[in-house]
Length: 99
Image 1: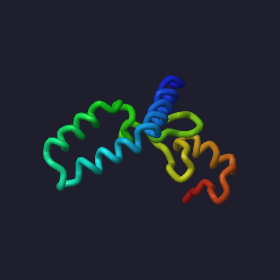
Image 2: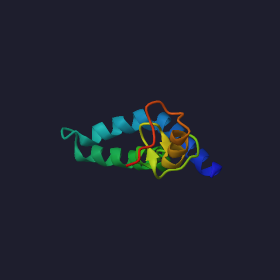
Image 3: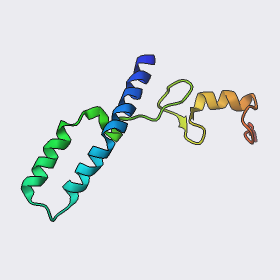
Image 4: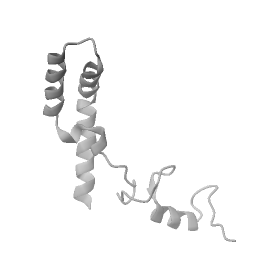
């Protein structure tokens, strides 16, 4: 599990280092006033960038366990940890409801 979290950290570092270049190349690619040959060169340049520098390769994870699925986005923790903390009443304004 720890290796997966480290891999995600490395992807975030790559994203930060290549983000400006990727955004610039995409803007050039979307401009219609440039010749088609330039579009092809920009496309090749985008393909040469590392795959892991793309924003879509990053997963939102629980900050405690590293779990991907079932994350409560307001608290940045997984639903399992959220439930444990909520039952202990460690979260202000959150209490168990029953009906």
